[in-house]
Length: 92
Length: 126
Image 1 (spheres, rainbow over the protein chains, first blue to last red):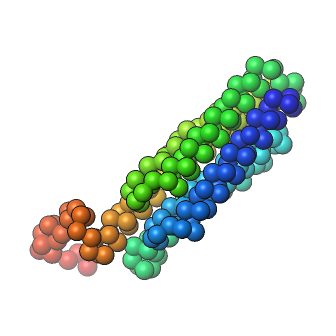
Image 2: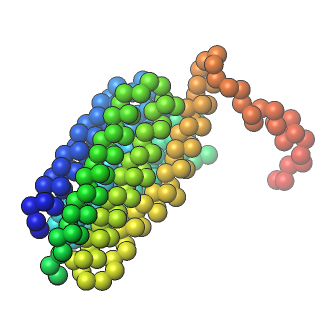
Image 3: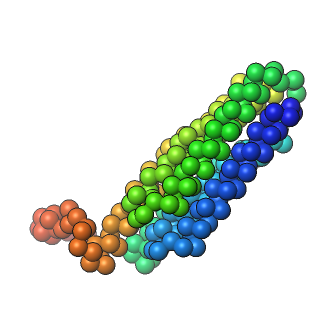
């Protein structure tokens, strides 16, 4: 791997880390429950992007499947939490 | 494992850096904007530009690495395009519902409330 690509990946991962920190601040501070749920949803997808970029860094295909699984769990948990704060129960 | 041409590495690096910048802009907007409904907009940058840039970089890089067309990273933004509108719409409805229930005066009235008398007149199927 060339130094150019390595530094680009390092910069991207740094950007993701900064972005995750900002979303974490919103998660802690968020005035209402829906702000926190949305912040968690966004954190999920940032973690998924980190896994994808790490897959390029390690030149491995297996990270891609992990990223798909994270996306799936993020969708299910966000939908479940949204349903919960809407009605107070997930399955009616 | 093939040697990767340098122009592909340049394009992959550009795509990755732009994805990182897009995600950071989205997080900045998510942190700074006032109000939940305004804050719902910037994460769309993460879901569209962020994931598409990374997926295209993955397609280019793994295609060059394996010497064949590797399209599987495109599954991620396609999956996101299916699921993200569902969660976003659900959360917007949740926020509207809770706002209405909290009795905020500047909330638009419910559209469903007008239709409930009609729905009650229909015979029960069970």
